[in-house]
Image (cartoon, rainbow, N blue to C red; front, side, top):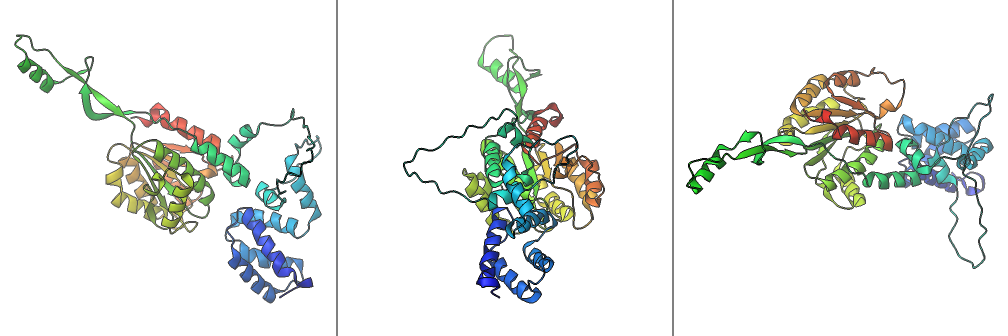
Length: 391
């Protein structure tokens, strides 16, 4: 199918590049599938052309907004094209004006052409911009949702996450060390001291319980609705795993996978590449109850034996409709020191625990926190460093 001037196949290929630059997981194979589908559906009507490409390129409902904006801009919608250019300008709305729906910056970054950097010896004209009514990019980045970030902002957010350090509050252990002001008497050390001397008075040795940060175990949901947030959190967990010991990370979707060893690599990009090759169920379905049952059966005794703090990263949307989830959550809660549930759906003000999975999980967690931007990660660090994590 060549279309007008034989450019349809080439234009579809460029459109796929725009979608890939905007963050949609489309590859060259989708171009062939799209051309075959267009041969069947035809291009006589714009609606048929739109929905044919949508059926080929969209895998999840969350991708619909990005595809819709990219389609209308790429295939010549002047109104949306003007909004692309307005993304870099501050906007002030009057009393009677209504703001338009926000345009994704990923689509804008994928569509705007990149100017090649060259030095022709000519003096560059400097343009001064008054930024008195603008916001600091760093301040805006703190509260911006991971899903709405442009590729450049995602790279900056990853760098900021890699620099984060988390101070886990230390907890007393069952081991003791000698201390002259300790609350306990060390009888064995006292007897050894009495045997070494010839004094009639036995000097009492004292001891105190040693303190150590508890183990941290993260269970990360890698289903289709969570993949965008989980990738950023894996950067955060990589920084933790390389900053302290006893940090264990497992992913779950339709199966449970331990990626602790892969995250030990010093380079974050190499570590995430190892994780991608290890995890086989990325962006698939979610069986939270079955995966937690496997964790409780195989890993709980090994990883939660010293009062670990568990981070459960999931939106609670279970494919099995919460079957057996309440029992497994109760067992997990009783096996750890503290269970913290990180849910990106809490970014919505009107969030309600309506799904069966959310209702089954919520009664068995100690903290229910959002995780969708850099500010929420800072709140997580404060929660882990606070006294509530030590009981």
